[in-house]
Each structure stands twice: as structure tokens, then as C-alpha cells.
Amino acid sequence: MPGAPVAAAVLGDVAQRVKALAEMGRSVGLGTILVGDDPASAGYIRMKQAKAVDLSIHSSHTQLPGHAAQVDLVAAIRAMNDDPRVDAMLVQHPVPAGIDYEAALSEMDPNKDVDGLHPFNMGRLALSMPGPVPCTPAGIEALLAHYQIPVAGRHVVILGRGTTLGRPLALLLSQKRPTANAAVTVVHSGIPSWDDYTRQADIVIAAAGVPGILRPEHVRPGAVVVGGGVRYEGRRLLPDVDESVAEVAGWITPRVGGVGPTTVAMLFRNTVVAAERRAPASKSGGATAGESG
Ligand SMILES: NC(=O)c1ccc[n+]([C@@H]2O[C@H](COP(=O)([O-])OP(=O)(O)OC[C@H]3O[C@@H](n4cnc5c(N)ncnc54)[C@H](OP(=O)(O)O)[C@@H]3O)[C@@H](O)[C@H]2O)c1
Image (cartoon, rainbow, N blue to C red; front, side):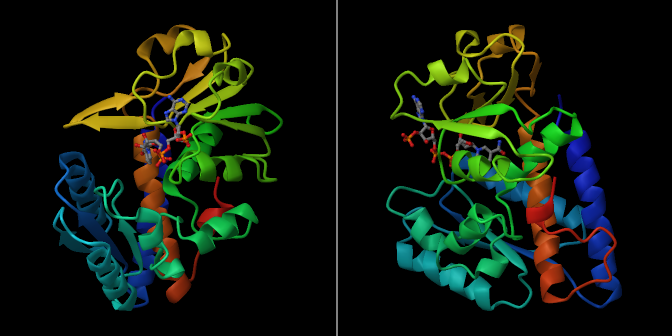
């Protein structure tokens, strides 16, 4: 089922909240940093900038060369920490070899961390405290809720324990909330027979970034399948979920236009929430991302 209706609802709310801030004389700003010239990453940045324009959100961008050193990235992050026009920022992932992404994230002002990946915010997530939730996990929870896929009380198996997707998603879906509250199992490359687990799952979420890794024989017939992991070869997007999985799944996200649009929507929701935190608007639907569903 497509992510577009979920994204449209979230972005409609964001637009209202940006307008409310504007009425108080506050603009909303998103800062982006890109290291190198990977075409897929550059495309993502352009798309986020275009969406920011649509939402009347100011965008600031810092482009660093592919040979930039860790200190250059840290300097760019610190400049955005100090820039009052930037309410929220991100470093586009993946970064070139030689850059320590997690170490760089630790330099970010946690209140401007739009991806919710700063250790402070991951700690908030682990403790079920309000805060910015990583965008793809938040988008997946919203997608399942939108299509009324029961998660509470179900067994969710996540293939992958990466920083941006598998690990925060496991934390999110095990929280005690109506749209989460699942029994969550995380499998990874240290579990050679990971399919023993995915075959038992009510919901399988692919988060490995290995094209075609999830095949029909890895899924219980009728199970819910969510494709989060993708790899780019040039501009070609290669999902983790093989297209033949659709023949056995009871419900499945489309290979393109499923999780992706919800991720972008959550990015802008986290941006406006960060701006509201700095200058509270008279809000109507003022949940933080941590309270989202
Ligand atoms: N759709 C979106 O909008 C969106 C947004 C963000 C991320 N993503 C995608 O989500 C994926 C995961 O992102 P991430 O940053 O969390 O990735 P990551 O850090 O690279 O983690 C990948 C995970 O997959 C596991 N894995 C890799 N190969 C495997 C194999 N053959 N068998 C079993 N497990 C295997 C790894 O295991 P080990 O831990 O043992 O190495 C690791 O836990 C990527 O494809 C990324 O592009 C999508």
C-alpha cells in the first residue's frame, strides 16, 4: 500500500504549523549537509530542498567535497548549531569511507537533530521519552497505523540492526503505545539462519540494504511485509524485498513509493516540532515526534 496518503496527511499538518509560526513572526529552517557527490544522495537533498520550498521552510545547505576530513564535517555541523536560521539539520547518509558518521552526529545540537540519531535522542527513544524519532522508523509506524495493520501484540521481525532503521525501529515498535506494543525480534548478519525467525513473524520489516535479500520462502504466507531497506546503484533503486514476495504476503508495501514518502514527511514534521520547541506556536495538533503514530 502506498505511503503517499500518510505523507500527505503529515505534510498537511506541517504546513499548518509552519503557518502558525509565521503568524508569530517565526520562520522555520532546515539545514542539510552533504559530503561528496553521490548522485542518489544529491538527489535526496534536492528533493528535500524542493519540499522545503513547498512548505515555506527555509533551507540552508553545506556541500563538502568527497575528500573532506572529519574535522571539516564537524566544523560544518557546529556552524549550523550556531546558526539561528537553522531549527533542524541533517547529515545526508551514507557518508564517504573515512568519515565516522556516528561520531559526527554526536557533534550536533541534539535539539536540532532532525533525524533523531544523536546518542541523546536515541537514549530518549530507548526510554520512551518525547523527542525526535528517526524518520524512517516513524514513517513505518505511521504507515502501519494508517492502513490499520495491527502491531500491538504481534510478532515483528526486523531484518537489520542499523543505526538509521533497524535499531531505532525495534525501540519504537516495542514501546507501550497502541500503534506499537509489539514483540520485536531483530536479526542480522550474525544470525545465519535469520529466516527461521522471519518465517515466524506476523510482520517482517526488511532493513538490511541488501537487494532481494527477502524472498518468498523467508515469509509466512499471509504475513505483513514492509520494505525499508534499499540500495542505490547509480540512480537505480534496489529494494531488499524481492518482487516475488508479493505472491505470499498478506499485505506488502510497494517496492517504490511505500516507506520513502513517509520518511520525507517525518523529516519535515521533526523540523517543525524543533522550531516549535524554540518558539512555541499556539498549537492545535502539537504532538512531538515521540508521541506520533
Ligand atoms: N526507505 C527509506 O526512506 C530509508 C531511509 C533510511 C534508511 N533506509 C535503508 O535502510 C537500510 C538500512 O539502513 P541502516 O542505516 O540501518 O543500515 P546499516 O547500518 O547498513 O545496517 C544494515 C543491517 O543489515 C544487516 N545485514 C546486512 N546484510 C545482511 C545479511 N546478508 N544477512 C542478514 N543481515 C544482514 C546488517 O547486519 P550486521 O549488523 O551484522 O552488519 C545490519 O544490521 C538501508 O538500505 C538504507 O538505505 C531507507
